[in-house]
Image 1 (cartoon, rainbow, N blue to C red):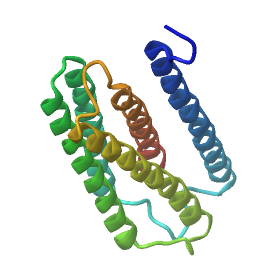
Image 2: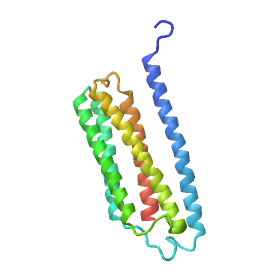
Image 3: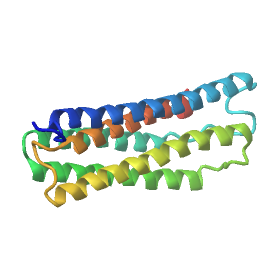
Image 4: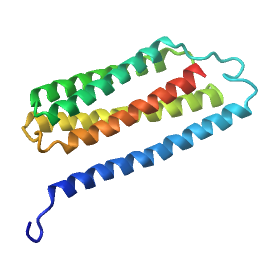
Length: 189
């Protein structure tokens, strides 16, 4: 390798390290939001506060199933491209995009019909802050996956060059894990 040439393994390693560090900063953001939620919740007389009902489980339960399934399809894409199966990877990315998009639509419907808003005091504001930030991260993940899918459609992803697929999967799995924690915290506890 001559002067100024990049080492492909080092480039791959650096990109994945950058994604992991970015995810670590997001872990810190969500950690702070969860900490604030639990402090507020512990200081209240009861949760949800009197006059408010806990959100129904049906729609967020469906959303949990959608995101967990989308993690499976995202991993399917990673494994497929690792074996050189570009068409299978593209199909798996499309299914992941579909499941993530349905998640966003279901969440929007839930927000419109759950019977409380930001005006529901600390209960509504913590609920919408946590779920809203997560929804924004799902949208960012969908954008990331759509870019990867577009690159794949143009022949820019192969078994030898698929770091972007792996990077998108790291982010998508992070978003899914955060949702499982959110679901458990906001809807079940």
